[in-house]
Image (tube, rainbow over all chains, first blue to last red; front, side, top):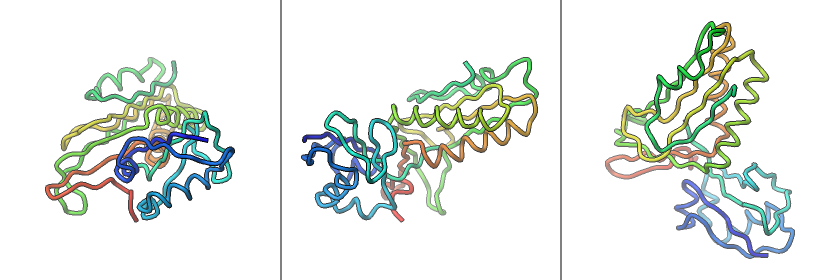
Length: 80
Length: 139
């Protein structure tokens, strides 16, 4: 399936764009997405940490991704 | 409405935030005002740039407000956060909390700003004379 991944903060710098399109297996898990992204963008692994949000909620590594989900990469937050 | 949550690219209005939470029943209002500091670890900061994943940030702030209302007897609670470019001395965040008694207002206000900094998807970039850094991105 094709998915679009939104990027914010330093993730946007790493992707060189505010979103990237990815090809994932149907019913891929969040951890599969992270692995695939890290292969393409190794600088992600240098971050203190980063989360994946699915439909505006922090997702767990074993959560399933669907083609219609809104996916975002959430690098360490620093608001306030 | 008991809570007001907002993300804005416009200058935040401190007095309006205080006025919004004040009620005749209030015994006290606690306000946290975040300001842009002129230095980080001794290095001069020229300005900050704030970026938000707005939809999720609003949802996370709503959660924090709901948690605070559950934990403390708070009357009204407001969270306003800026985005965009902010100069030294400008205000990126205002939390205002009213309650009948001060303990609830102090504790809820502290909880909201501390939790916001941990969970709300907003990012700040520090701009120095010789470069720029996304805060907290790297170990």
